[in-house]
Image (cartoon, rainbow, N blue to C red; front, side, top):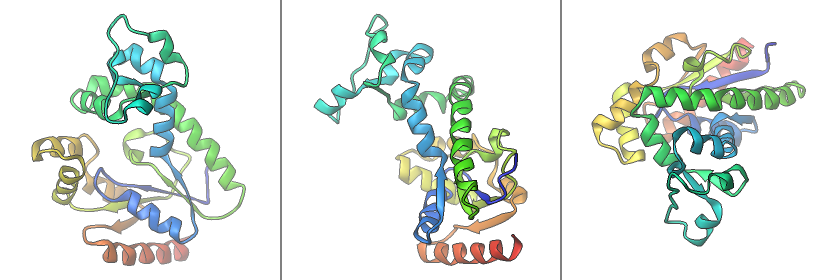
Length: 224
């Protein structure tokens, strides 16, 4: 099945996909946000995360409500049964620190989450496709995933690698080595640019990005 009214928005960490999608939403377009979907799916999988990676990566929501700045860690004998209900969420920052350092752990997480994320994206796309209007699907790991063949129009939000690293350093409060490692976990941005149907340049400031989005929409209108 192909979704002919959909255009994927992708790029690399730090490229500005969210900023582009915000600008598109301001212009009245509907957006499917794979990151938002993944966050919901991750929390629904809190029990499995505790089982696979350890209960220290899961936080009880009632504990969060009592103290938003603290995390409750479960020991090996802790209340794993309590993690099967909706009163638990995943500590994404802590789990991210684990999986970004280990390809094997990252593969485990992807195997758990991606089938569920893909199913939810498909469900939302089917609903939007029925409206017969252009919409966008924000999928950060589109080229890495190899599971979204039902989308055939792809726009890459582009910025040079050094710019990506600098943005990740600032946003995630990482040193250069750690930020560079996260950027390099994904397919090289120049490769993504070469594979794209459309390129949205985000190497500059917000004003330049707004102009780039307008050029992209005009090009899109001319081509489809």
